[in-house]
Image 1 (cartoon, rainbow, N blue to C red):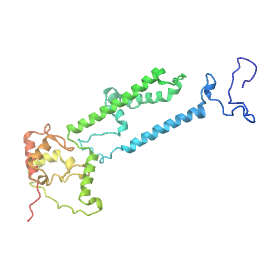
Image 2: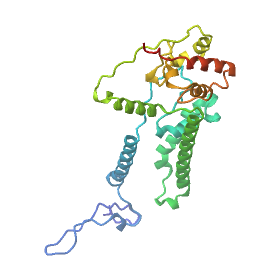
Image 3: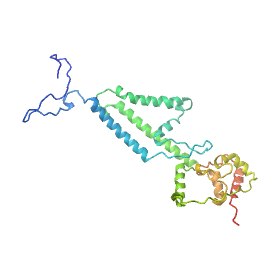
Amino acid sequence: MAHGHKSNEKVVYVGDSRVKKKGGGYDTVPPDYSAYPGKSEAFIPNFLLKEWMVGVVVLVGFLVLTIAEPAPLGYPADPTNAAFIPMPDWYFLFLYQFLKYPYVSQDYVVLGTIGIPGIAFGALLLAPFLDTGKERRFYKRPITSILMLLSLISLFYLTKQSWDHYTHELEKTNTIPEHHLREEKAREAAEKGQGQGGAVKEPAAIPIVDKNDPAMDILQARCVACHAVDLKGQESAGFPALVGVGDRLSEDDIRDIVTNGKNGMPAQKDSMSPEEIDQVVTWLAKQKAPAAE
């Protein structure tokens, strides 16, 4: 309806003022907003409700992904474990990879952790105020659409780069991820009856053979951080015991593991001389349980 008879006076549409007559006539259903040239639907509650519904769908989809692919729990942090490769949850891999670049780390770490992410989130918050055009179709909004596509491509690229680097490091150090080791140990425990509450007999303590061998000095300097001072290992952290290792592995297997590394054990071929490796391997091969009498 109009407020007066002036032709330039603003017209405010309040809906359909027609009244249905008895026996037929006008329809009481208000016309669509498109019936009014240049008008759109009301922001509150019509448009805002649609935005909320889209946000809910996206959030639920994201939560389903995080539940379907949960981040595996690792062992407690151990600063002495040089073979540990830190990794964030998969949905932060892009930011983890981004912070590896020199221009957003070290002296520029504030720029990488606060500056650029702040600009990105600030632009997202200001988008409704900066993009005030009436056109909603993405192909008629080239700047906004290009920025969106570049953002998606960047997220995909950084995530893939981070994961490829992680798998490469695992292969290079012959490391099995902690959650894989945990699953393997749980499966072995179930096969032995531990999963059903069955009591498992503790193995008898195995003594260290030839404690005065010079190889012990090398082991005390390099191996006790992971395998413990008494060489009984730290099973909870995935480090096996060295006592009795001669019963589990042949001398050739021990030499290969010490030289090239395996399952979190870093390769020693670059940090130990061949003579030291031979000395350690020979001593480890002698670590066997005493023969039963």
